[in-house]
Length: 103
Length: 290
Image 1 (tube, rainbow over the protein chains, first blue to last red):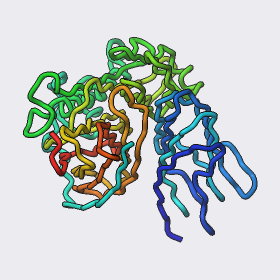
Image 2: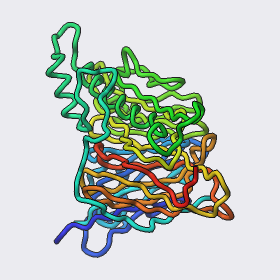
Image 3: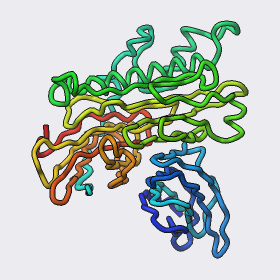
């Protein structure tokens, strides 16, 4: 099966928020990730891998107001993601900009 | 509020020219200009090898990064001195500053921001270094980078490597943004193979509902470029639009339509590629807004 690459920017205004749902028979992995805290205060942000009804945290970030944290390709969470990616944040809005590869 | 739509991404040519208009680093005139960090580091290592006494490895890394930073500053700070752009009056001259070194000792600082002086072991254990600014502290992931955009502060910080005692750190600070349009090549801040954003001021001199922005890009490979609209100075943290744009290797024109209701007001254009050797060839606007 060939690879499909999807790039998106999403604005997160509610928590938890499903950033990406993996379609059909694919498994996703994150290739590029940046997270912006556009709220006026610092935020504790967690990224979760969804596997059916199970969730597991894959990234925790304490982000100052006005910060965009950019992860290098070899620093992004490496977990294979079966169902989706969700995010929680104790302050919003948060912007998540990412590329996922579907395999 | 300001909005933006990508109208077209047009591949102009498959040619990848990564040398024309790339200046020699003035402070290290013994180094040849290059956009490739590994080439630059190799030059430094050959010319000034580690001697175990005065010259140690972090100095070579910081020198290569400083040389590349100096090149970026030259391209950015000369916007307006060639053809159209923000030059002319001294108040319009753009100002980007950058520096690199060991964040522990002797420390990395620029204007009123600095890396917290912690040893490399601590930085690696906590998974991030800390940049101290007048507004707040910002975490910079080890092997990653952080854009700091708050009030009138616009900076990019990165921690490419950590060791037991030392950690290499790089800081860029935009003190005065270059205005679009301009017609000259501009490069991006880098830290090893990581790349940071470039920022430009978009400020229509006459009221207009919208403007077409044509961003000429040379890309060494296929990649995503993220274009973000932010508030102007004093309100940099406000994010108004974001677009992910896929460009092919070679020269491309990204045509973006930015508009406001009822008119387009001043905003900051942020361009963030994935590839460190990406070059902006020009940014034009229709109608011209200078």
